[in-house]
Image (cartoon, rainbow over all chains, first blue to last red; front, side, top):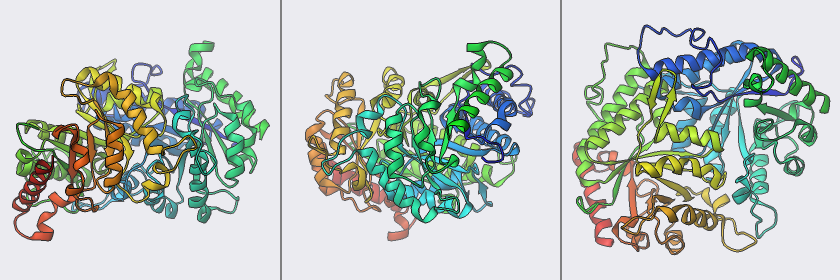
Length: 296
Length: 296
């Protein structure tokens, strides 16, 4: 972050119907090998992610890969997820798998293998995605988060637990007031703080982060007070209506305390501002990067 | 359900290190085609699911595929998920994808394509898993559930929304008392009821079901009162400690009101009781099926 002077996360939620030009050509997949729509679409998605990453990687610190967009392409889509993660890593970017997983003990452990670890089989070990971080849904409680954390922590990876999401409907459940005081979100924040305490590093930040929507700046401020050592992943800038200018509270523990995530506003900047997709994306990424850096 | 006199759901959460004998041989995958541990492990997992399904399918109405267990095998694992779903459908079983997905609008729509629909690409349509039902995490509110429902409903498919899960940690969030009265679970139940109302069919049951852990019978009874038209998916029987005998309240709207899900207690019955895996699984499945049927 210090090296790149950036807190910007490039969100990639590729729609095979809206890819950048030359995506298929840049896939580096062997298109003669397997025919079929799913394989070609997954190849094109990989090429798209690769060229978007190449366009803006020096302005960003991480990519956030929306796993749903890969899963809808089936098995080749999962291969595209792994290769897109690889393309990001090649450019020195942290890989955040935005999968919002949450399940009971044994199933959570299986997701931990899928995203962070590997799986022992009689045929040899099977490697997972090798993500640096995973978004996690905490509705099932801390015993559903713990197996993910035990796989992530020894590898130097981390979690981003949903505390207050960026969508309008988030209020229905997350903002409910509790009889004992506070809201559901605040209770989730307490869980994040507790799980994260043993993982606070030299910089004063923990390996258990929180997803806090950039669309609700008032929550950003109050949740920051509750989670002083937590890295906030702040999605919702741009297309969803969040503004970087309103996020100063996120950076209270220092610049690394907040990661500003933008997806469509960078990748489809050329649709609003015209010009070459890569140039338009660079301009928008630069703007967001400078804005966040100046604020923090 | 009436035809098979069963409310039993076969849970499949395959661990490649604990598969039934002959799993690899029964995979029907071309093992000469692709080398590598992931491919062979996924083939074996498919064969395992196929022979377990063959052993007990006439005693069950559905399979519940734990998606985490397939995802940890990467792209071949996703192919195994699709083929295992196919093997279940061949035997006339309803396919429940236990994926506990939940995400904001566009991402939820992508998950809907992955599990229920298909995805338009410049290379042709890519088919999804073709599930009959999906488990859904409602922490993000009803606008995150709606895109899944709009894809499922017109296809005659449905959702099972997490209302009260079977794990001990569920209490931490789902049992929180609200200032306005009731608990978080009860608020989720109200959401399920509301979303499900337009989907109540001739049998008086809705296409929006609820996951209610068999480990918490007191909750089953109180949640049933709140959701009179909702099909309850009741996991946690057996290995997790839930007992079919305690679930009578689930069947208040009729036998089809409750689906009893058991995974390890059926698949690994031979480890406790000895004998051939298929025979032991049949005995345990028969026992659970008769118990639930007699109760309802």
